[in-house]
Length: 117
Ligand SMILES: [Zn+2]
Image (cartoon, rainbow, N blue to C red; front, side):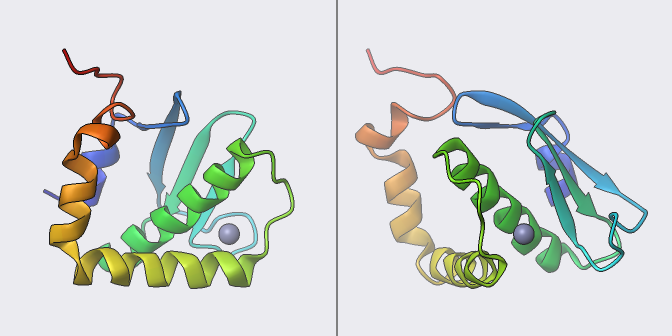
């Protein structure tokens, strides 16, 4: 399944629904690959990049959102670039560990509003 299919109905972040839209045009400053609109809970991902780059761009924007939800308004772009790139490598190189973390009983409490019975 391609990224565009996975995100077409949006994603939940911090209990809020966020729309994710893949757009054709350059984003505002022309060089940006992604953009986060905090007021409208909307993430834009530029279409003119490879699938792999789109995934990293989405992760980059998700880190912005996580910081925003934590009340941090000033974001260091180079730090977020480093985090998104290295987190993606970490997840891909240790997919079994991340699969365990995602599906462990403690983490299921935070996923998609489900609770264990
Ligand atoms: Zn950024």
